[in-house]
Image (cartoon, rainbow over all chains, first blue to last red; front, side):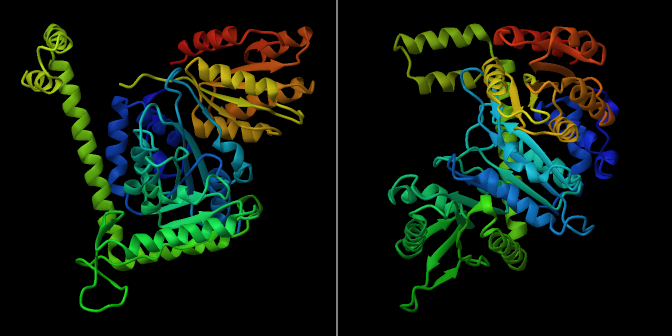
Length: 345
Length: 134
């Protein structure tokens, strides 16, 4: 790998090899990767980041394939948005390896030079994304992609980091993957800007959609104060209607529930419609900039944490650590006391 | 700097009807700590080279059962070179008669693994091959 592969000019001009090499450098935190990110960062802010999350087997990859196709339709249209896809899959905690199988579902996209698909292994990061997924989005945004679809690790309930990274979060559910109780595991529902009930040709799809609708309404109706993906809302006190007034300038988005059969393309046009509608909503209300600010803040805080820990580790005396650890094992000190003693290095 | 992982593309060029062998290898390489991207069946050389480019892989493993290796492998290698991927190591597995192997090696294949090759051996050979690339 030579330095001149990491050429920001080449990347912005559409050189895909340069882009691929830059992504590798960023993923591995090489010294060159800092320069490339610095060069591309001022050009970011244009791309629409769309997160797609949901349990394994719900059809995320198939849906992403269809969404990318729809964005690129009609083919050959020079004005069609350039689409990048980041597909994240889990790294095995035992072997450190990963099977990155999302591309298989995206065969239709082969040959379209306006699409770039990159698979990432989570490499131990929790929360559904890899550590450098946000940095990948920066590079792709700076490279000029208009739409960046980020497919996260198949979600349970904890994979919500996508909510801070993406402008629009699509949660994909499938019928028959557990009873209505699954819908109550609200971490996922709270981050959804669009809910897709995929595999709608299967029995139970309507019931799943109804249960999700009920969950959404409960989340709105019950608490007098709740946070919706970071937007604080308050029940309007001055009249009896179930209206919500925004605190500050923040407005309310009605999360649509869309039935779809991604493998046949059914419902995909509607989902694209919801996506564009959400984008317009964010831009009109100013939430687009608010989200950018929140994302950059989160990024900054996370980097500060990493740097502080690394500095502490470099300054740490191993002998001191071992002896204090021994104190804890012999119950001479509590873990908290020990940690404070060690930080005081 | 983060520990560098070996990225491998396992591809099925041509018209093979099943991919059990490719999947076995893919799993084995994952178990050996590599990041494996599997393309699925019926890939053209263009599709394989395109995937190798986007994923910036260190290794491309071609699994071919159909007997079309003499046509497909050089075609893939040509496309890889067109894409600027000259230093990617290409391995071939599947059904390749011994007499055909020297020619494939001359065309740029790093190694050919016949049926019965231990997956550990494949993983080790890939580790060795990549060390010379990074």
